[in-house]
Amino acid sequence: MTKNLEVFSDLSERLDYNLPDIPLYVRKGSLHQFNNYAAVAHWHVDVEFIYVQKGSMEFSVNGSITRLHQGEGIFVNSQRLHFGYSLADHNDCVFLVVVIHPSILGEKTSFIQTYWTEKFSLTMADFLVLTEKVAWQQSILESIQDIYREMHTEHTQPNPLRLVSQALSLCASIGEHLQPNFEQPGVLTHVQDMTRFIHQNYDQKITLDEIASAGAVCRSRCCTLFNKYVGQTPNNYVTQYRLQKSCEMLKETRRSISEIALACGFQSSSYFSSIFRKQMGIVPQNYRKQVTSNDSS
Image (cartoon, rainbow, N blue to C red; front, side, top):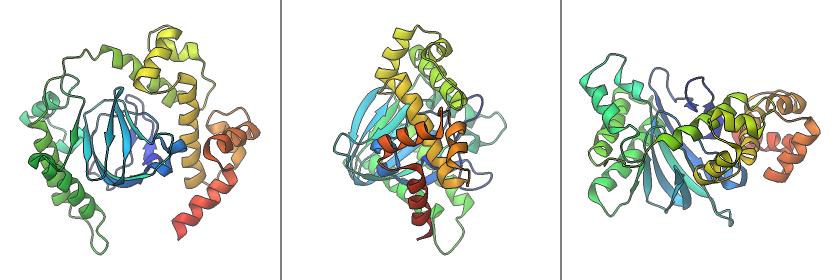
């Protein structure tokens, strides 16, 4: 999941969708991919569906934490800060993720888009936990698995019409069960502004004052909001995001360790290697060899 994230200007995260011209991100992920078995908190305009295939994980949406077990899932509404993680035991979790961008509806204004905006706005529920015990939720969980199989069929190309139909069916089904969210979204906007600033400037030196200023809050309020909605301090979040980007570059490019260190905002290659080893349990060079070997096997 992390290797396909890229920053873009007006929102927080944009995904590298599987197929050209179809804004669907359909992948299998696992917590061991992430530093300390914890994804970096992020948000996007896309809506997201997750199905847990194996294991369990904690999942945070706007600071509200839910434990997801094997066979369960979760729907995350648009523009909500979210991330999955394992507790101190570092147990792994394998999951399917389906992410759907609103542009799948097309570019023209229509009644359908008006309905989408109504159902997947900040005025509606942040998330819904999905279990096999409720019939309509079980149907959604099965649909997540169906769309994954269609996208990753081994012997034939995926059917684009079926993929779009399945994606829209997922959204239609969940939309019927979303309730209004009576909490004010204003606070979350501050957090999104601060995380956006970090995502856009992680390659530069970033101070706590700058992060707080991006969210139009004081330093103390900045730290309080990060602790509540992101689960860590602003400075730790900066480090985690830089490490995420460095992992992407180590895997996807042939840039030197020194180049990657500077490109990710670390002071030097030695400092980068020290932080990387402390957090990841392996030096960058060996991490690159490991992921390259896994891809070729």
